[in-house]
Every structure is written in structure tokens, then in C-alpha cells.
Length: 226
Image (cartoon, rainbow, N blue to C red; front, side, top):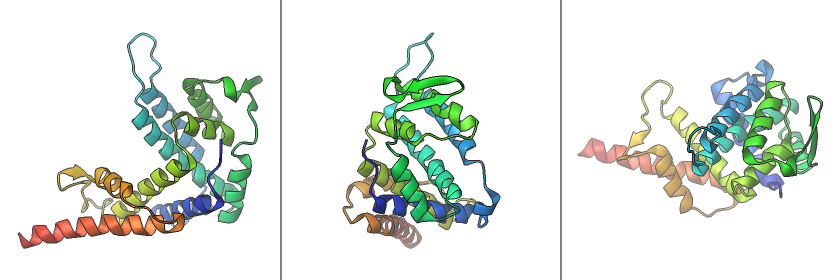
């Protein structure tokens, strides 16, 4: 399990810090319960993977990937909290802990992370988060299980984060902005644009934001002229 590069981690941490400030300018001091959010997202991910033995279920892997990207937002926030907002220190901790071991002791029981299936991994992630613990090797194994390579994790996280920024900037909170435009949800537009962009890691957020804004503004202009 290879960790994202330091450049990737610093870019993602910077984006997360910026998004958190947009929601709450004093977010570091308030120390929100980001691991509670991990708990909730982990149980939602379990629903998408399927756990009910009394009915036929098929894992929804695309939706599971989305839930894991959402979890990553909160993991980044938690590491930033632990580093008191120091992105370099948070990146260093993430990189060091990414594949730091496969054994874990919790609630009097020893776990070998290599023997757990996805359901068990999600259950353990939720249980740890409930008592404000986080195991980065466990998160890394979940990413690997859904084929979220470092590059895929970076691109999918950046696209989701940029979309969140775009929505807030265009008035999503006040109701001015609607996610559906030009016959599709904005996340569909984002996915199309992402597939066509190949730039250096550090440039991806700005290029992606500009492409999405350009498409949206062109549509708005065309609507006004029609």
C-alpha cells in the first residue's frame, strides 16, 4: 500500500483547510468531532457494500468509493487538528502512519488487518471512530480494496473538494445555486472535465475549478442571451 506523495498530501490538506475555513473560520479552535463524522460515513459505506444476510444484496462499489472519499475529507481534518493546523506536520504523520503496521489491539482483542474483509474493516473503522481513535493502515486498506490508488484518491478527492468550493462560491448555502444544470448534476459535469484534464498535481485544483466555472458561466450567459 503506497501512500500519496508529499505533494499530493500537502495539496489535499491545503484544500481541506480552505474548505473548513469556508464553513467555520475558527474551525481549528472549535475542534469539531471529525471522527464522529467518520463513524457515520463508515456505517453508510457498510450499507452500500451490503451486510444483510437475510436478503440478496450486491455491493455498490462506485458508491462505496464515494463514501470513502467523504471519509478522507474528515480524516484529513482530524490530522490537521492533531497537528494544530501545521500542514507539513500533518502530511508527515499521514505518510509515516499510512502503512505503519497490520496488527491492531482494540477492546481487548487483537486484529490482523490483512485477514479482515471489507465489512469487517468498515465495522472496525466505525468502532474506532466512536471512541475517537483512527488507524491509518486500516483506512489505507479500504482504499486499496476499492482500487483507490494514490493517484485515483488524489484526483477524486480534489474533484469533490473543488466541487464543494464551487457550490459554496455560487450560493449553494443560500439556495441561489442549483446542482442540476444543462440536463445533468454538477458532479457529472465535474467527472467529464476531470477525465479530460492532465496537469501537474499542484495545478489540478485551480485548473479544475476554472474549467467547471467556465462551463457553468458559459451556460448562464447563453441562457440570458436566449
